[in-house]
Amino acid sequence: MERSPADLEGLMQALCDAEVSFIVVGGIAAVLHGSPTTTHDLDIVPEQSTGNLERLMSVLRAHRTLVRDPAGRRLEPSDAALAGSGQIQLVTDLGPLDILCRLHDGRGYDELLAQTVTIDAGELHLRVLDLPALIEVKGSTGRARDRMVVPLLLALLRERERSSLE
Image 1 (cartoon, rainbow, N blue to C red):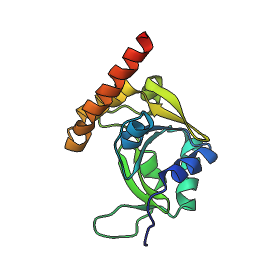
Image 2: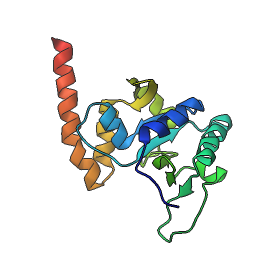
Image 3: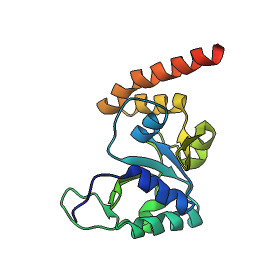
């Protein structure tokens, strides 16, 4: 299936319209905090209740979602995978979506909730991992591309701290 360029805002809108509870993490979280970085996918940690996962699966079906498979097989995401504890790399007709049932350190939606902020992005009100937590997560993944953004995020945090003192 040929995919058009990513419409990650449209993907977030679809999730919000369906009332899916999720936390934005990863590159989009950095961008929403003001980082001058780019990303090609949306990373989310969804709330794991049955109703929320049903709403999430409804959005995935509506947007012709497939699992990103190196062998090129046309695999659809499963309810069991969404309810699991791993990461599911997907491609939708709106762009790539990574669903992290739990982060690499084992924390899921409930454990992360206290470390989030709501960021308004146009009409969207998004729950996003807060800047200190995002810095900690990016710095601990072990991936070079995540570690590269940490200095930018630290600079944003220092600037916000300075601004709050004025």
